[in-house]
Amino acid sequence: MVPREMQDDQNLAFMDQAVVMAEEALAAREIPVGCVLVHDGKVVARGRNRTNEGRNATLHAEFDALRHLLPDRSHAQTPGLTRPYTPQAEDVIAAAAEKEGPVARGRKIWQTPLKGVVLYVTVEPCLMCASAMRQVGIEKVVYGCANDRFGGTGGVQSIHSDPRLLYAPPYPAVGGYRREEAIMLLRRFYISENSTAPKPKKKSNRVLKTEIPGVVSTPSSPASSLSRTSTPALYPEPTSAPVNLPPPVPAV
Image 1 (cartoon, one colour):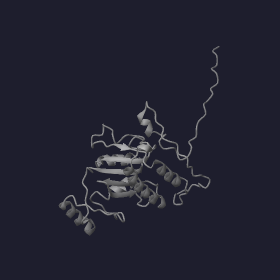
Image 2 (cartoon, rainbow, N blue to C red):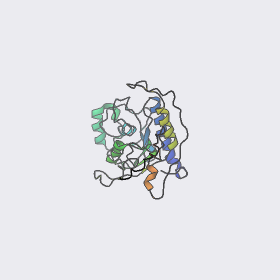
Image 3 (tube, one colour):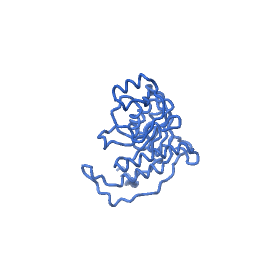
Image 4 (cartoon, helix red, strand yellow):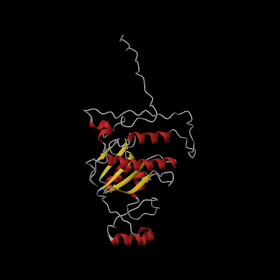
């Protein structure tokens, strides 16, 4: 996790745009995770969770953004997103236009690896998304809060840097940018009732907690900055009291 005093304004500005996408997901009753893809200092794609909306468990924010760049897409483009750049290759554009019609003309069809493209996402990518980022050759990942259940860039596994994965080069991943905002969005979602669930849970007695402990790290364990202490649990986990065992029975 990058300490707040070491975070630069440019990274924070791009993360702010990812937070906007996460807020859009929250308004749509999706898990509030949002992201933007940036190249040469410009946002080239945006994404948010659409798993319920699309009835597709793989439609995490990262995949939603990626499908705006990669060829053979069959979806509506992000409203209001401009792409003021030159196509990579005329033959690629022509092939895409033949498949997708007029929508493809005049926009860039990206090729992998996505050199120079940086992902800004409000929550650490899960194992699936971390692997996808490595396969498409992302340049770097910047995230908000750690994902201590499914994180793929240090939270649970380090898919981004594992040398055993020979299919694609590793990429750096740093966290902590707008961490508090990302956590609060998740908390707001998880205290709300989901009326569309098969068995909706009553949550009227839950209170939105605003206290967010800082990141805890120890010199002896650099990875601890990405452990469970990075992102506090939305609700306190039960603690088990020490068990007092009876004294041993003396031998006769």
